[in-house]
Image 1 (cartoon, one colour):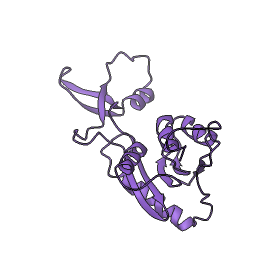
Image 2 (image 1 turned 180 degrees about the horizontal axis):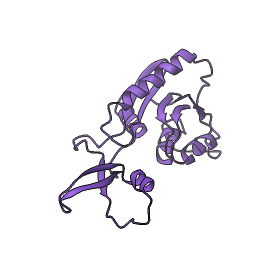
Image 3 (image 1 turned 30 degrees about the vertical axis):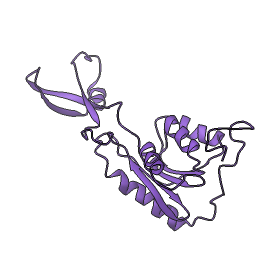
Image 4 (image 1 turned 180 degrees about the vertical axis):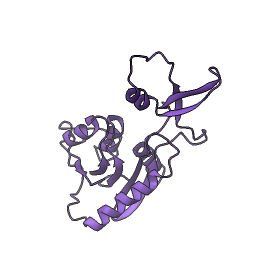
Length: 193
């Protein structure tokens, strides 16, 4: 219980995260990961769709996907226009940085652009944990299945909510979230994407 309140009497990671889940059958691990992938498809994000499913006692108790806060429009990214100042970039670099093309009102022509995620976008894990917080269920000893490895901020939420195991598919751009969870005693397993 101390862990749920945020207290670590003997230091970080000294309290066991919960019962071991080594006995979960592979077919159920695949089922819950498939559920996370299907949940990701609910996202309106263009750059990356991420899904998360929280499971406890063989039941899904929460799910989430990345997106804007409730009541906001569903546009998760802003367009970043190519100013044309990158004349030193070769065509592949320009296409990688600005993979889309569309009408720019100011330029009165088609211009290449990229997408940048808005800072208001909530990650799939934080949405799932927020939904869990509104329910009568607890994350203590639960498993979370995520299509992508968690960032450091989501990893902290996962740990503080008492989730004991993280199953994920794709790597994130940095592994600080995974490293934090390992140091905190949370079981980590990367599944085939």
